[in-house]
Length: 62
Image 1 (cartoon, helix red, strand yellow):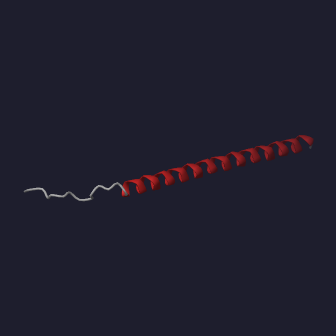
Image 2 (tube, one colour):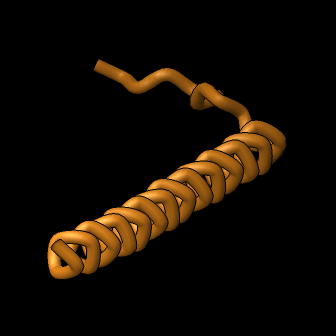
Image 3 (cartoon, helix red, strand yellow):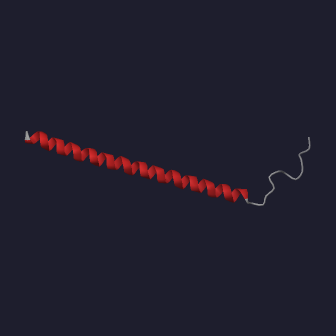
């Protein structure tokens, strides 16, 4: 009977460790996604204010 209790305690501790690891992985992925999103916004902002004309000044000849 005591062995069953120990096994239950061990399993509970293992599940808690596994859940904590999964939370950490989710948090890491979320922060990476946010960083990528911010970087994309920064490059989009810098590209939109370059001062270059969007279209060529002269059309191509046929």
